[in-house]
Length: 243
Ligand SMILES: Cc1cc2nc3c(=O)[nH]c(=O)nc-3n(C[C@H](O)[C@H](O)[C@H](O)COP(=O)(O)O)c2cc1C
Image 1 (cartoon, helix red, strand yellow):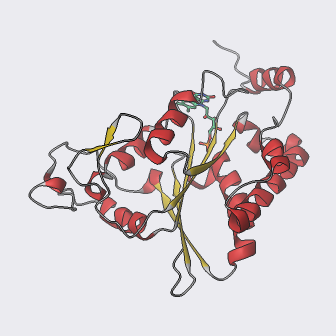
Image 2 (image 1 turned 90 degrees about the vertical axis):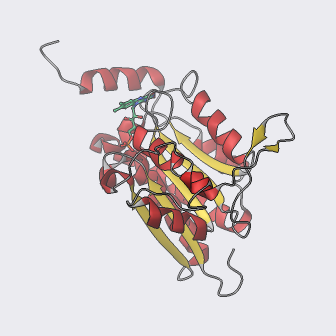
């Protein structure tokens, strides 16, 4: 944390194409409410709304490593976003699961992080390789918050979690919530509000301990609705006559 003025810079990367109507963002906002219990007034929360940002694809030219070290030659919103990433104490990646991974525009944003790395190859303890960080001062804490449409994480979240494990080691915190579309169902508002209270509790615990209690972890991992009921509910919700 920024010890000098005790300000905590929290950067939320809202990667849902639905912007502020995102199911995932509902969880993220509850988590931030919990964090604010500790940092009230000292938390500066900045949100990058990926869907409305001008983010082009990496060209693969490596200019950010050669002719313009640390700087991408593409002139778009990534200049500002990278500066926010560099200055963040906590980065919250908030996005839905798309085809067992991150939505494509979030991946475009991630690819454009290349200027933050140095070209040299270093050996990882696990036998793999990586590139060192260009900026030594900041090692932001990472939080992954994601919802998905199925009721299970099995054969669903493995690839994304592996990607985050490789990127951040064990050094990140995650909230994964299946049955995400239920967040927009008014009939389930009691259960949704209950879940969001646990998420807020998780945010508060994170701010104080950098971890969740076993009880909170268990509440976060309990489904919003039993699978059988959920599947019936989900299948009926499409209300489509002409297939
Ligand atoms: C293109 C697309 C791909 C999706 N892929 C998956 C998937 O692989 N697994 C899954 O469980 N849900 C999948 N979903 C469902 C979303 O993850 C789910 O609706 C999520 O709650 C949306 O969150 P949001 O409102 O934050 O965007 C997909 C949805 C779309 C539109």
